[in-house]
Length: 424
Ligand SMILES: Nc1ncnc2c1ncn2[C@@H]1O[C@H](COP(=O)(O)OP(=O)(O)O)[C@@H](O)[C@H]1O
Ligand SMILES: O=C(O)[C@@H](O)C(=O)COP(=O)(O)O
Image (cartoon, rainbow, N blue to C red; front, side, top):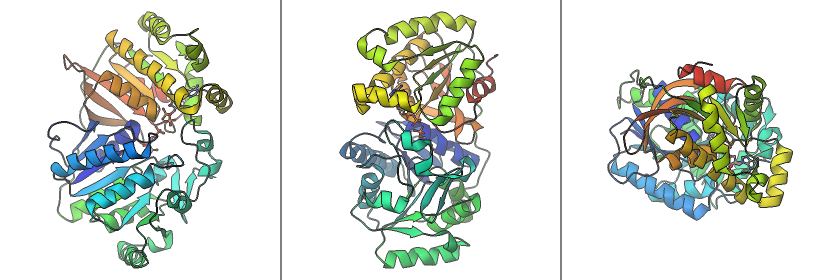
């Protein structure tokens, strides 16, 4: 294994796995820290659900993942977080980075969430989402990790006691000048350098400059820049490594717990077509006037007519009202449990092609389905591939598309299902 990736959520894990596959690395994604040996591959991605949990728990799980990757022989470790730097006031990007650096005995790493193909660029340490600063984008209203500061040096500095610096774009002209700047930053005592990157060429420079660091921390964009750097060092030969997924039939469904602007638009487009769309109302769930079992029964009944969408996706005002009534974490968990329960019931009813929107939501759903490993197939859009899992028990194949809340065009759900052979 060349690269061992620790991803802080499940959509992020398929995102980075998809990038590595695209750059020619044989990549396997495992869900949670496995008990036994890791699979044989150029890169192994361990998907955790640590983005919004207590920092101490996130650190413990990340260190367990690190141990497994080290036992599998990983030459380099990559801590994958969101391209919008999603974190709470306490972390977990800073605490997990610090813990991994200590465990690896290293005194320098970078932090680079840039993913230019999806509009995430970092310029002078500030993160942009399209033309907007992160703090002006829809991320300011995220239910669990509202991002209200685009200055990543400042955001990260608040999460670590160590010195955070900036690897600015004007040093990214080539790997030699970037390398000199890294040496200077290290001499200044900087432990974590936020790296600018506004296009894929910057990511290639970052990849070349950082290919031999024990630890990288990034969104999925840097994963594009690393494989060419590894290949130049003779560590592997890129191959067309995208898995051919099995052709899977059976009913299809979409579960959506993301409240991002992109997902709100995708739900609106689906509803406008008149296809089945069942709404989960967290307040009604809490009061008991709606139950997950009731919604599941409706969804199962509708499957014969075609794919079903079940969504809790709501606009920011509505999310805020729910959170004011129930509490932020309790509201999130209530919805996640409901969608996970519905996923289990739908799979028991024969659903074999499932799209899930939202990182936390995907984590809850995939954990409930007790899936252990994903094969990465062709991308539906940048950052979202179809994947194949074997169901526990009988090992039957099922296709899963885990969509980051922010990714995909307005017609993503139909596009994904059609790509998996679902007639609409
Ligand atoms: N209507 C709602 N009100 C409050 N919280 C909600 C609502 N719908 C979903 N949630 C919660 O919001 C969170 C969305 O996070 P996530 O699934 O990671 O989406 P994204 O990928 O957009 O970040 C989840 O914890 C989900 O349960
Ligand atoms: O880097 C990204 O933007 C995604 O890979 C990601 O981490 C997804 O997180 P969610 O938006 O919470 O799904």
